[in-house]
Amino acid sequence: ICNNDYQADLMFTGDLARFRHKAVTIPHCYDPAMYDPAPPASTNQRFTIAHLGTLYHVKRTAEPVLRAVDRLVEIYPAYRGAFEVRFYGGAPCANDLSVHAFMRQRGHVRFEEPVGYLASLRLMQAADALLLIDGIFDPAEDGLDCNPFLAGKLPDYMGAGKPIIGVTMDSLDQHSGA
Image 1: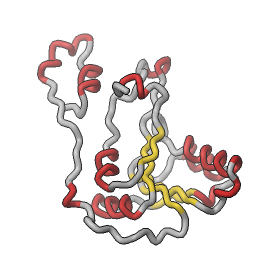
Image 2: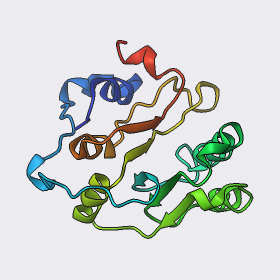
Image 3: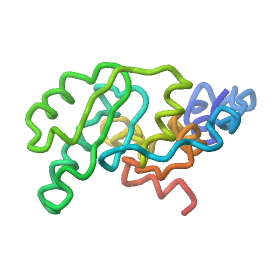
Image 4: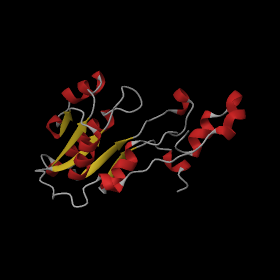
């Protein structure tokens, strides 16, 4: 069972190609009944960008976002204190913690404890925007020129109805049909 045809094509190559006909594609979805139909108005003091879910020490880390926060405030000093990025999930990896420790604007970023699924849906609706960090693969290192996996949080984020900020691979548009 795969969640997109590209993933199935990638998985069933070489010796496994003969089993491709057994692959079934079932796209992710969300259940609108699980979301608050009338979420309360935002009470955030600052524009809040939330990332919910697991970060990994390779391919999907907070580092590009942490560096971007510092760069954003460097270029646009008026944004200092105006926004916050919250990461809800498991403990960040050592590299993310190190990058965070040396940030000039680390007060703009918080690492929070994991929350349950229903609580995550409420946090999504309470945020001003949602952050989706896709796996970043390298053709030379990984033999992949795009990420074959659908980020599992994307359907949940779509259900929350908030703007989504994506950190994705440069070549993503080559495979999206755009």
